[in-house]
Length: 92
Image: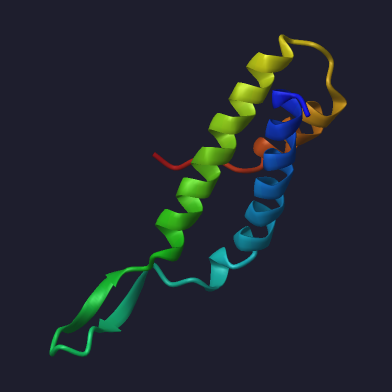
């Protein structure tokens, strides 16, 4: 299997996961309550968002690497993945 094929496979997996998880965004609170059982209670950032952001960042980096490896060749799969990538914006 060529390196580009490995990247394409990973991109498909990450894209599927991004689509699945993005459906949860409207229902996920920004902060959550916690109780560590040792007398510490409070609120903290919901771990959903950093995990989602890391996945999106990995997807974007992998996509750019796949584009570079394809050397600008017309690749319908990368074009399809590019259109998907454009639906997701990485917050900075």
